[in-house]
Image (cartoon, rainbow, N blue to C red):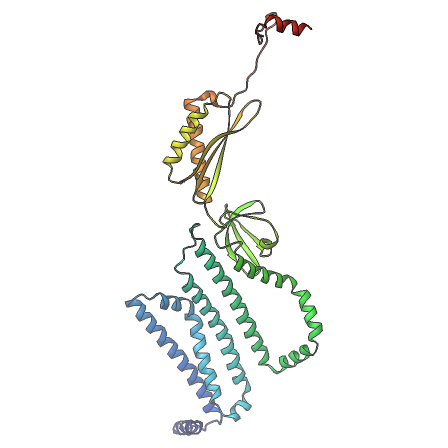
Length: 385
C-alpha cells in the first residue's frame, strides 16, 4: 500500500513539474487521515442533529450535549494514530515526533472522552429520580452513590492515563525503575504524606455505603442549618438557609456529631412558644390553634398539641406543637400559626398578653390584705399553746 501511494504521489508531482520528497507521501497520508477523521466526525454530528430534529431521543441528546466537543478531537486523533501506524519504519525513524505526538494526542483525547462518557452514564442512571423532594429517600441515596462512584472512576481513569503518558517517555521509565528499587522507603513516605487523602477517600466510601448523608439532606452542622449540595471525594458542600456555602472535609461527617433531619424520614415537628399572662384562656387558644392548623395545607395531620410547659413569676409558657412534611414547611407553618394566634389574643383576649403589675400603697390608709378565716375554739387553743 505504501509503495502504491508513493508511486501515485510521484506521478502527481512529476505531472506538475516538481521533484518529490521521499517523505512527502508519509506526510500526505497523515494529513489525509486527519481530514478523514474530521469529515467523519462532522458527518456523524450532522446525522445526530437530523435525528433529533425529527424525533427527540434522550440518549442522543445527552451524547450530543456532553460528547460533541470531545468527539471532535478524539476521532481525528484516532485516525492520526492509524496513519502513523501505516507509515514505514524509515519514516518513523526519521520523524519520531509524529509518532509520539499521535500517541499523546490519542491518549489525552481518550481520557477526555471517557470522563464525558462517565458523566453521560451518570445522567442516564439518575434522570428518573427526583431528589428535590425530601420524601424521596431511596432516590437521593441512589443518586449519592452513583455520583460518588463516578468520581472514583474518573479519578482512576485520570491516574491510569497519566501513568500511561509517563510510560510513553523513555526518561519516565527510568524514573519508574528507580522508584521501584526503593519501593520500601517510598511507600512509607507516601503513606505519611497521603494519610489525610486516604482518610478522606475511605470516609467517602463509608458515607456512600452507610448513607450518613445524602444529596439534599437537611442537616445542622456548626450550628448552621442547610442542605447537602455536593458530596465530593475530599469535601462536602452544604448550602445554608441564607444561600451561603459551608465547605467541610468529608471526614467531618464521620468523626463529628451532627444533626440530619432527613436521615430516615423527612417529617418534622415544630414548636411555637408563647409567653402569656396568667389570665390567658388556654382552651380558647387550643381551639383556635386547632382550627388554624386544619385550615393550613402545610400541616400533615400527624402531631398537634397545646400545653402549658412552664411558669414564671410574671407569665406562663404555652407551647404549640405541629408537624409538617419537611423542615421548610414546618418553619412556614409555625410562622403562620404564631402570627394568627398573636392577632387572635390581641383582638379577642387582650388580657392574655404579658402584663407588669405595680401596687401602690397610699400613706395613712389601710390597704386590705389577705384575711384569715375564723378558727374553731379548739384550734385557737392549740395555736396559743
